Amino acid sequence: MNQNYHRRLRQRWEGRNRRLKVTIAGLAVISLLATALQLVPSFATSTQVVSIIAAVASVGAAIWLNVKDYSLPAAHHEELYRQWSLLKEDLRELRSTVERLSGSNKSVSTDVIDKWSALDRYKSRIEMAEPDDPDRDVLQQCYEDENESRWGVRKYEDVLQAKQSGRAPNWPGLAAADIVPPAQPVSP
Image 1 (cartoon, rainbow, N blue to C red):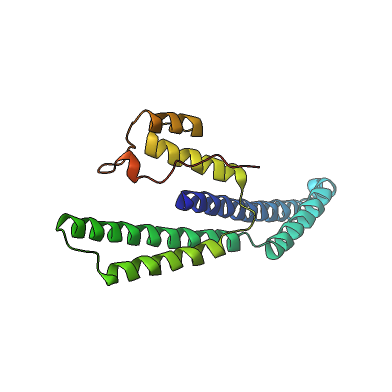
Image 2 (tube, rainbow, N blue to C red; image 1 turned 90 degrees about the horizontal axis):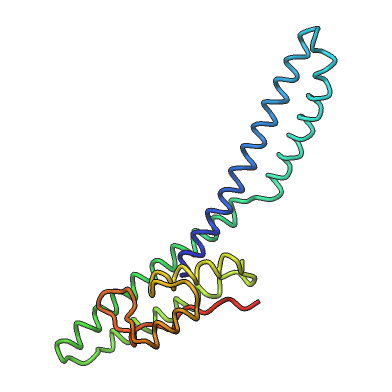
């Protein structure tokens, strides 16, 4: 779910950054065209106002782009996405190791316990880098996406009903008891 959240926010910030850059380019082109049309005597007076407005708007947008850098939040969410992805891969590998050991009646080694502890510390570091004020709408969508991918339904109440009825989640090889609790709705 964390991956989905950060992927969505990265895309949002990248889109804002791209739209702002396109706006600046468009305003610069309008300003250039209006200035060029001033060279034609019949358009000289009517394009002066357009040229000035476009130039002022272009300068304002360029200043805004330099003050409010939308690429920084995008990069932050990209990095959090990458870290959550790595953690998820490591946890799958560790789970596979534990299942292999339990299938062969061998006890879990201290290496596995150490790996679990290291992953838990890594998870804590990632959580500390999470924003203090998450986007609740995006978070709610991600919870519902996670519920739908696991259980086939989006709403928390429907997930609880599916779990109580004994329906297994949509993950091959996992029983309902092996799954973390369903994602709960975001509280305001």
